[in-house]
Length: 365
Image 1 (cartoon, rainbow, N blue to C red):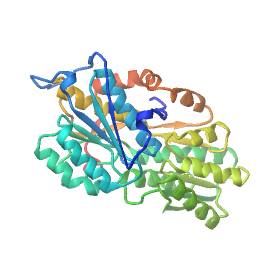
Image 2 (tube, rainbow, N blue to C red; image 1 turned 30 degrees about the vertical axis):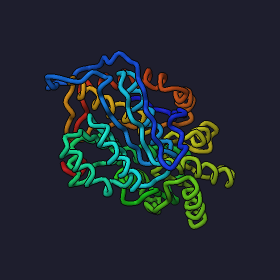
Image 3 (cartoon, one colour; image 1 turned 90 degrees about the vertical axis):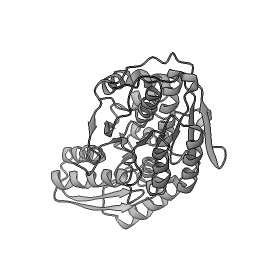
């Protein structure tokens, strides 16, 4: 399984106003693997209207997804609207979704950290026969969304914790305290990661006390402040882990200030956090492969509009992978361009499209 994508710093994805709106213009040949049960007729690429909407354009994980969506559009010669608020703003995202329903009539992929606010708009999209794929966060009941691409986040959380446990056991440490946090309690994606971390410690190091999952914060400033308080309140702890993106940088800063005495790790691929892995300050991050999710969700919508594939139903289980000091350099190198990411992921893309890794929706099996 691949290690995962890296951050794309495309000028069109940089937030410059109250909301982010970019059109990704492609010029590819539109070739791709056909799905079974494809529609009898389809549109030409230049006539297809697709949108990808993220939750927060300032965050690495959203920029990754937008870059993947953009890459799919360019590959197939389809103009893809790339949308996200410049900060976590659920009402603004709902307005973007409602606006996209008027233009992106061939499909909308959406990643949201406020899915409850989107339920009515998503249901209206279904009534208007606009295909919707939920990305990263499971769709809620009443949304009428039947396609979801996302990680098994409990497994992803355990992946991070298992690396911390391995390092502790190598050092002969079987007792202590680990603090586990989620930046937005109540969001299944993040809660499941944090719960997976706690469960891994309970199974492998039962004499280790786990504090949490507790709340941190999703934005960099708030996250650093929250973790400063958590570290101060848990002075005997030696392991600090977060289910979100911003903590990869803020935990690194706190660890440096403490002289590197902690095991600190989080999720995603922000540059400061990756550099902290390279220099040994952070022990690891888990890459949820957001670029791949953005690419696949957009490509599936495009191929459906072209009449080459039907929209799947259920949970398309996306893989995640660990990034440590051993493989961080190749991960950083892959961050340099979408072309490098696509080259890295090509075999995985072909394999998943040929044999989709589908399960029932989380909680339904």
